[in-house]
Structures are given as C-alpha cells and as structure tokens.
Image 1 (cartoon, rainbow, N blue to C red):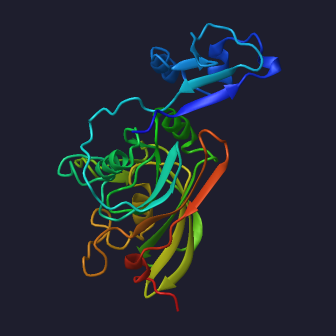
Image 2: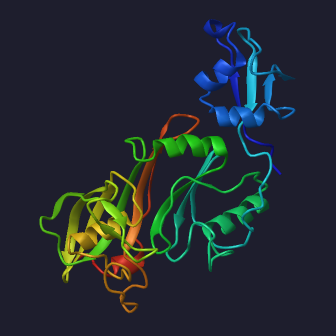
Image 3: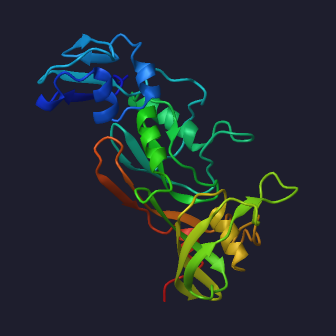
Length: 300
C-alpha cells in the first residue's frame, strides 16, 4: 500500500522565524480541519525529518513536510469490481468518464454497483491508500466527466472552486424540438416539486439557477444543445430545458421515457476544467458524445 500523500516545502529566507502553522495555512493552503487531523500523527508534520508542533518556528533552508493524504480507509463503501474509464490520474486527483446508468454514490438499491464501489476496489488493487472523495456528482443516467479527489485536502480545495470561474462544466444534451431563440440564458429558480421526493421544478421561492445554452444542430425535430452551468442545482439542466418546453429526449421525470430511442435522459458531461488543488495549474478534459446520444441527432 502506498504511503500517504505528503507535501514538502523548503523554507525561504523571508519565511525564517515564521511559525509552522503560518506556513501550513498561508503557503501550503491547508485548512484548520486538515491541520488538526495531521498534527496528532507521529509523522504528520516534520521539519528536516523531525516531528514538530504547529507553534515551532522555522529557519531558512529547512524542509517542512506534512501529510495530506488519507492515512486509513473508513470502510464506509464496500469495494466491488466494475468498469472504470479513467481519463487522468495523479497523486491528488482522478478524472473519469462515467458510463450512463451507473450511480456515483451508494444508496438504496445500489450498494455495490456505483462509482464509489468501483473506485474503492481499484484503489485496493492498485495499492492506493484513499477513501472516496467525489468533488461533484452526476445523475445516474448522465454520462461523462467526473472529478474525484484522492484525499480530503484536495477535495476541500476543489469544492471551494465549485460554481466559480475556476471550475467549468459544459454539457451536451439532446432535447425535443428546437429551442427558440437557439441560444440564450435560462435564469429560473429551482425548488422541490410539491408531493415528490425526487422531482424539482421552477418555482419563485426556489434557489437561484442559471444555465447558458446554445443549439449546435437540429435533426428531425430534435436538437443537440451545448449547456454551461453557472449554478449547480439538482437536475438543473433537465428542469430548465423542460421549463423551456424542450425536455431532454428520454427523460422519464421531466419529459417522455422511450426506451426504444434511448434508455436514459440524453445528457453528457462533455467538458471539465479546474485549477489543480496542489500545483495551481489549469486542467482541462473533454469526453466525446456517446453513441446512444449521437444516434439521436446524426450529423449530415
């Protein structure tokens, strides 16, 4: 099993005399939660290889090292083998292309056949010491790019990016009919549908929800639409497109289910970009339109 992920820092001349805590928070960007968790570990915070406290002071040239990775697995999610299409992986993050019909989190009826189960099995087989740290979620029927952190510190940093310009998600959807105008902004608050534990609807007292859309092509009274989220409400794209009068093809909840066309709502997370939680670099990924959606709006 791999050792827990560590971050290291060489103390700069202008940082000489600083307390360890100031470097951990200010330079390495660790939260109080992470620091409280690691300071009790035998090798949690080291200065030139020797355990120190957060109140100790440093000298220029010394090497500060801190554990940020998981040190144990909670066991809350049962490892189970299953297919994973991993697009990118390093010590801090993992990006995968989720297949439609697979839930992200275990829940009623899906305790061993979710992305969480598959990843815990993959981590165990690869010798990766990590719990399941999803950064965002996709509906079970939605395919496409999903970002998972490999430790709690990375998850914290990435969740702070959600719904900011640093974290961009672009979706492709096939809807019934052609939106008019062909592009625009849907700014309509979303809340729970009365009497339903699952469905959402546009309602005045709902949470602010903003979706940008652009029609890419129209084929046989269906349209392929590019959508970008400004907010991230449950079922946001599906609710907003139904609100426009153009529900997603195959959407059993907000449109019309038709298994002969497609066995799920026609929605795909096609583009994902974010700032790497450790390096600060911009990371960008794309996943092509899956065949079941492409067949609904074939190119001429």
